[in-house]
Length: 424
Image 1 (cartoon, one colour):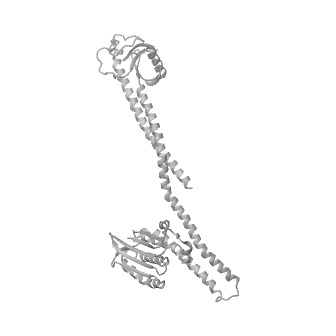
Image 2 (cartoon, rainbow, N blue to C red):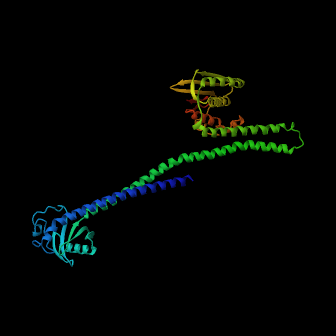
């Protein structure tokens, strides 16, 4: 599914960029083509205008067809013209009568008679006032202007200009191909990066559904089994069957806590933008909670040490932060080694309020540290179930801390201790 999504994204991206490149290249080519054509037309008109007056004046006749002369010789040049033809232009002029027969000709450079005759035939065949054609591997442009007894055809070699346009097409093609290749790999890279968060979220959602189903399946199986036992002994009294009823009740309460935690997580994520916070004393909250937990800690023959800086005020929810501390202390009690120790510290450090809860014990392996805050994740599933946990406590703690604009992290030394630290 994600591979198809990536390919669609890639194709859409390449198609969009290709269209934009095509439009850009076409626009540049059209503008360049029009500029070249305008320059050619202006050169043709200047050349034509420089010789149009001698043709019209009926002065000394220029050489006949096939006897081309340079622009500086021949009687058609007359006196110096105001409109000087382009010096580098390879051009020639042909005067025709009303029937299209060549009468006079003149050129800036020596032109073969067959070339001028063929050019005239091409221009007559096109039968427009201006146009362009190819002749013997060269490109020629022409304009036709009326004279008293016929027409004046002015021809100019535009092979160089046409070569510029052709090279422009080749350049655009090469650049386009290279750009598309680069864009393909670039788009593929960013497509993979764009889809990866979606894929990760989807995988987490699948894992979440599988884990939640697994967590619910165990108590449901216990409830179903105990209900079958009750139904198999319909004549027994409730007192004699109380053991099975207590099992059912215990598993029902476990399911209730699980669904409650899941709903709590969902409600917190939805309510983050609108959650109301106030200033409260985190030091006092931690001290009050320790007083309630001391009896449980001492009952398990664990030692408790705490170092709390008084009067540390933060912005947030006192009840939610109390729940976070409760979760961390509860985990510390569960996973502390026999006759081990638990330490809680709360200080101000570098403009941050730092709360840390440590316990001695087996510790957490490095490969688990990045995932212990995921929902339902447990480093030892069998032990966690035997202790009544379902792997949502740290996920809830992380969600609350992030809601308060802080972060939570864990450090552990296998076989020695584990420390959870909160930075607010």
